[in-house]
Image (cartoon, one colour):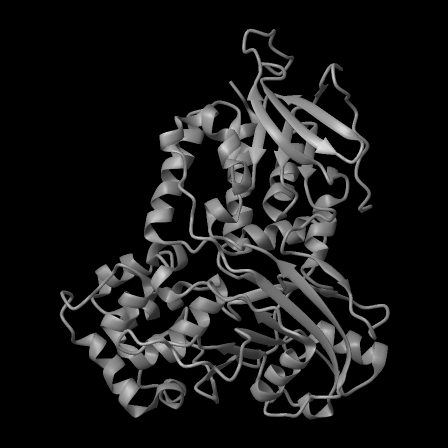
Length: 493
């Protein structure tokens, strides 16, 4: 799809362009909603302020690796549910599983394999050998007490208090923190259990033990890896969704208003042009009119405010999300051929002791993905392009409160420590991808406010909100929610 913006079709004083639906935001949520509406035979326009679609799902070239596009954003999706897999198949793309290599953790200068049988790092079997290797015999002993502790010794306020009250500090800091904090770019004490681990709290109430709750959820999970990918990269999902869709780039929405509801109904029974969406484009102002509006970005909460409730009812300013920096490297390093750290490592965030400031970590990255070890399709294409001994590695930076803007030397130093291999002088090319202000941490208070906001939106005919800020983190949640919203909006009374 061309990244050139669609030329504005309206000018000041002109009659607005009429379509059947306007979608604001060309991330995966917006593109999925647009496709679902188009399947109902509707004319849909997607407005996107950025100059490329996809949001955090994007691909591109890596210097030194000619002819192979790589993911420069999200590179997998959770296997739970069928929404993403079904969508990928419908688009004619192939779902692939990662290699069988496991992931590792890194804490206090030490790397260790992460247990495979867990949920967000919470182990189902505290005495298993892989758990003991990670947390030691003392940590495993404390975690095993979960099976006999009465329910009253449980603190459900956040994921941090839940894991710590049931399984102790070692499991919380060495297993749960690197996994959950890495996925959500937020500290454990900001994460709402229901938001980040659906069904875990209910399973605990049923089983009376956190370990047994995790085991019951794992038993319901699909066979194979917990994540899947797409042959050729996740960015192909965005490319296929955008193909054939009226996606208008560099179109920043400036105003949303209700049009006169007394206008004559259109042929499908909906009030023609009941929403007015105004945007600023490189060619001047644009106005679209449509009976259906889907908003996928929290940046327009204030614009929706007068339409869904009083100012006092609006979402409060959430705690800002972390600024994320993803650095993708092409390395000449035959020492990595045997995948010494499996598919990559999750780095435990510094923890506080008795309220004291955490000591600095020797690694600033929060995660490393050994992409050519994780995805066989990428390994084969890299070898075909530049020969054996070459690897694609991604390091992720960005925790709430941190202002890290890593230079290349810092990145290579981190990668060297995590792999246990000196990688200085081995970089053949690199790309830095930036996202400022990722999703706010899903604190219990924020999730309650979001639920109340969605309830007010649902009461407004022809309006829907979706996206990660509503559905939660991960493509599995985002795709399913966007499809549901669009189907509910397809028929407007």
